Image 1: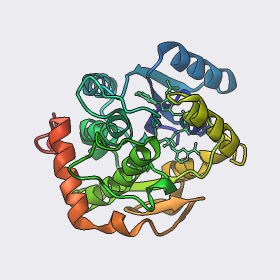
Image 2: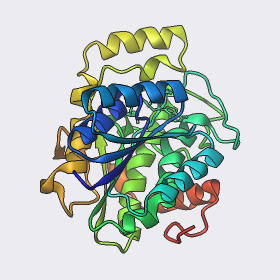
Image 3: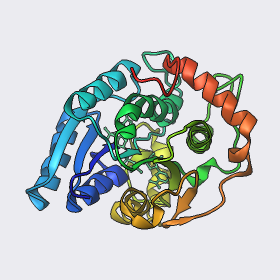
Length: 286
Ligand SMILES: NC(=O)c1ccc[n+]([C@@H]2O[C@H](COP(=O)([O-])OP(=O)(O)OC[C@H]3O[C@@H](n4cnc5c(N)ncnc54)[C@H](OP(=O)(O)O)[C@@H]3O)[C@@H](O)[C@H]2O)c1
């Protein structure tokens, strides 16, 4: 990966940290997008301690804020013309329904819309790479759910799992729809599920009962290093050169939910997401 430039969102902890670390170990330059400056700096220093020659840039952005996503995108484009790999990884789980400063339900904003807006902003730099890869970290939670059109923010019946599952289905629908719409053959876009991974995702914005359940559940999971393997495989392996619009698990493609192949739902969600992100033309450089 020497000479390649990557972006990893949510790079300070869990799967995102291990993805940034793995890319740095392979010689890539990595933009680490993190929300919290202190946590981001600590993560960067941890990688540097192991890989002193690592080229790392910390970009601070709360991805629930479209203003901050736009600022982060502009800051990265100021520093580089070319991005080879974008890993949309940052994700969250909220017990209680909360709204962002943009008036969007937080899980939908961070887990779904932020992937789309950042990809749009960075797209011109992906076009400049000889071969570029977009990797969307989804989850098997996307099975057995739907997009709640008409109640996207679940204001009628909020449930943390339902909101999370919807956002993860959104990741797969976005992946396939982007592949259908893009004309750049040298840019691939794939979604993946990392498996059950021992991270703190279920402890950050959760009520004590949900935290307790997550602690029990994650005890059966794999380490974040193991959980990052599919992201790293998709980012670095020659075996997936040119492979696009697939859903991956344990470094192998597997079928995603039936609904994720529904082109009508994908197109409808695309249009709504563009409007919510204020994007006129996804492929038009800003
Ligand atoms: N763990 C699992 O079993 C599992 C299973 C399937 C899919 N996934 C997916 O894997 C991805 C990574 O999750 P993880 O398990 O590694 O959890 P994690 O350790 O909590 O990592 C999530 C990362 O996203 C960041 N993030 C959350 N909200 C953000 C915001 N508003 N702005 C900027 N960054 C934000 C977090 O930053 P802070 O540290 O500041 O919160 C953290 O760096 C997620 O997309 C998740 O849905 C995880």
